[in-house]
Structure formats: C-alpha cells, structure tokens
Image 1 (tube, rainbow, N blue to C red):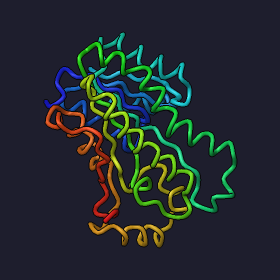
Image 2: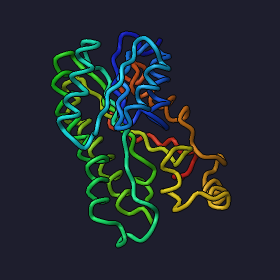
Image 3: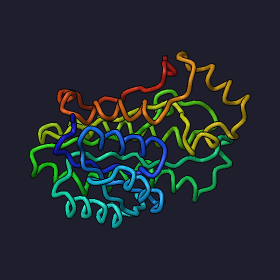
Image 4: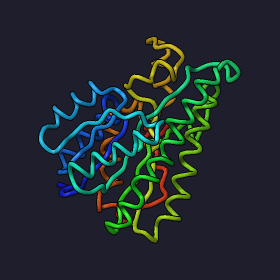
Amino acid sequence: MRLKDKVAIVTGAASGFGEGMAKRFAEEGAKVVVADLNARGAERVAKEIGEGAIFTSTDVSQRSEIDEMVYAAKSAFGRVDIMVNNAGYTHRNGDLLGVPEETFDLITAVNMKAIYYAALAVVPIMERQGGGSILTTASTAGLRPRPGLTWYNASKGWAITATKSMAVELAPKNIRVNCLCPVAGETGMLAQFMGEDTPELRAKFRSSIPLGRLSTPLDIANAALWLVSDEAEFITGVALEVDGGRCI
C-alpha cells in the first residue's frame, strides 16, 4: 500500500502505459482519476479498478478540460497528490517535411502545452497541501533521437527539459517533478513509431534493445509507482530510462 491515502490523476489512461499506471497505483492504495479523450475506454478502466476510481473525458490540449479534470478529482477525493502527464501524440515515422502543420500543432499541444496546463491547475493545490509529485511520460526519443520522428522527438526533449526546470523551481514547495523515458512498447502508437507494424520491423526494433524485447505497460507502471511513492522522496528532476538498455 505504497500510495495509501494518495490521490492520483493519470491522463491517457484508457489504454497502454496510462492504463497500466492507473491500475498499478490503485493496487497500491491510491484513489485514481482515469482521464482520457476516449471516454468509453476511461470508463472501462475505472470500472475495472472499482471503488476508488473515477473517469473523466479529457482533451489535454484544452485548458478548460484539464481544469475540469482537476476539479473532478478534488470533488471526488478532496485533494491531488500525484499528477501524471501521460497522454501523448505522434506523427507517423517518415520525412520531417511531410508532417502536416495540424499534426505538428497537435503534437505540441498534447506532448508539451498540456504539461503547462496541468502545472497551472495542480501546483497551487499541491503547494497548499504541503507537497506533491508530478510525473510525465517522456521517451527515449527525447534522449537519443532517431530519424523519422523528428517533431515527436523534439516534443519529448522539451518535456525532459521542462521536467528538470520545474523540479528545481518547485523543490522549495516540496513538489517533486520527474519523467519516464520508455522505449516503444505494445501500445496503440507502436505502428506509427515504426512506420508500419510488421514482424520484420518488430524484430529489427527488438534487436536494438539489449534486453531483447519491447516495453510493457507493467514495466512503465512499476517505474512510475516508485517515482511517485514516498520511497523516492529524495528523487526529483530525473529522466528515468525504462528501455531495456536501448539508450546505452
């Protein structure tokens, strides 16, 4: 029960890494707000968690919807201890000049601006409570960018730098800020990362990971659980690689 009496908001929690985190946090005693643009998926995850979870239909690119999400958390559970910025968006692997402007704008809105909106909403609450934890799902792409995902890579590099700067500035308020850098895993975004999903491309990708497999939602959830728990109370500003050795 490492998160007993804690309240966590997880965005992008209807599937993939976010679903894994929401369920893992609940197993360790947290009250969880399952937030996602996919309301039906968020509702399913909240129901599977059971008592102690609610869902919200949230477009993280809209400040008003993030404010509503945080209001729902406060209304249901009275506080916000953990804010997980997990929702993400990418363009398909390919020529950087071939990415439409509307796709570029959505990448920056979901992967970057949503972190700003979330900070505006939760930092004052956490400060009044005496502290809290903010966690962002970044990517190995932000540490070791490869061709074909240039604008996505850049957004994750931004998220890592924002994490470190926020960590320094919010430390006096006892708010810890960290991020995870997963290697690609079995999520809905895998095909876009690779360009297309074929057994050959999967084998090629796996061969670049020393531990020999893609990441799983549980891998990411376990790392997230430690970072937001009191066991990591002296850890802030970290971009934790959860990548099977990919970035070495």
